[in-house]
Amino acid sequence: MGRKLLLSFIICLLAVWFVTDNSTAAPKREMRAVWIATVANIDWPSRSGLSTLDQQRELIELLDLVKEWNMNTIIFQIRPAADAFFPSELEPWTQYLTGTQGQAPEPFYDPLQFAIDESRRRGIDIHLWLNPYRAEIDTARNALSDNHPIKKHPEWFVNYGRLSYFNPGLPETRDHVSRVVADLVRRYDMDAIHFDDYFYPYPLPGLEFPDSAAFAKHPRGFSSDEKEAWRRDNVDLIIKQLQDTIKSIKPHVEFGISPFGVWRNYDKDPRGSYTRAGVTNYDDLHADILKWQKKGWIDYVTPQLYWHIGMELADYAILAQWWADNTYGCPLYIGHGLYRIGADSPNEEWRSSEEIGRQLDILRGIPNIEGSMYFSARFLRANTFGLKERLLANHYRYPALPPINNRVKQYTVEPPENPVMTVSDLSIHLTWERSEDHKGYAVYKFRHGIAASIENAENLMLVTGENSVSIPLTGKTSQEYYYYMVTALSKSNQESVPVFFDERM
Image (cartoon, rainbow, N blue to C red; front, side):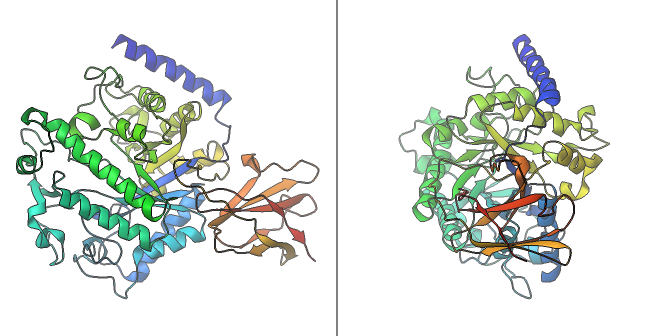
């Protein structure tokens, strides 16, 4: 305990130093993502039963907010519980769209394709967020459609508390989830497949997860006293199967996991963190995150560190450093809990927007941490205590490109052709030709007489999926004082060489 407090004190001192010395350091590449939760209509749509037009309007509003906050990625929940926000032959339409499971939006549209198209238009990356095993949110209240997997294969499922789950011990369930992922990767243009922390469910007091029959049928060499190890192996098997499935179809698509924030406590394992969390990934959720990182089975990890700096049981600063020390070459982003911020928070640290700023100060000073993800999107709309203004004045003053993930296949692209600048209607108009292999574009602005460096984040003006942009003509944009360049982005976020705009009168 004494060592833990000392470590926390040292890290917090470092955080203060970074506030004064490092908070203005702006990386050109940094993950800045937000989760858009659809289960129970947490973030989108605001309620079930909205018209197609209203659903689309709300999603566009959220994507515009992502751009306003200088973020670059959304984590879009498209399968909360064996249901779908897209047309699927494997699972029914989600009830969170229309209010009735199995019922398509009317007038018909594909919400996932709409989200992808609108994200690409804005130069926003999109990660598709699936829950692997949750099958029914409330067994006492839900009305399942006839084509729900529970109706077709009841033998695949178990009830635990008020929820139903795919039984992780059955190969049939792993195969089904893999088919769902394969179908998505084949049909849609996404940047990543993303799983959250729900593998085996969080334990309920005094209630054993009912997988004894599956253990007896598929022990795979594990003895009766090795059931916990067998459960971890079940999860290992699906993680490896999903990695292989994704890469066999589109090798540039990433596979990311956002686990609970504590792998193991130090009192259980000397490799663990100096924490006293009541639940851990390894011991309770049966998710051996470190193994997946070592084996290369996942392409990024985002631990959910939804606690404040100095919290006694799970100190944000200690955990950020611990995860950074245990990446095994796997890209690491940190999950932040925007929902914690509020005047009625039980913790004083969250009664302002300063805690997030302090956390970002820490991250910017720790090697191996490449950005952040925020839960969740509705709090961008709330902007509690002016967090948006605080971030835009400091950490997110400039746009940023998503990191390049070297765990996936890399693709390069040729630069945009025929870049032209014209001035009319009190605006500067930049246009260029689009190519099919261009995912998006980065536009840079430089002052005449100063050497152009596209590695300096201050010169990155905007990221877009369009092949034109109009800029109001002012003293800070005039072609008399500034010149412009554009690069193309590949599907693996590699950047082309920059090209100058040819000014035409």
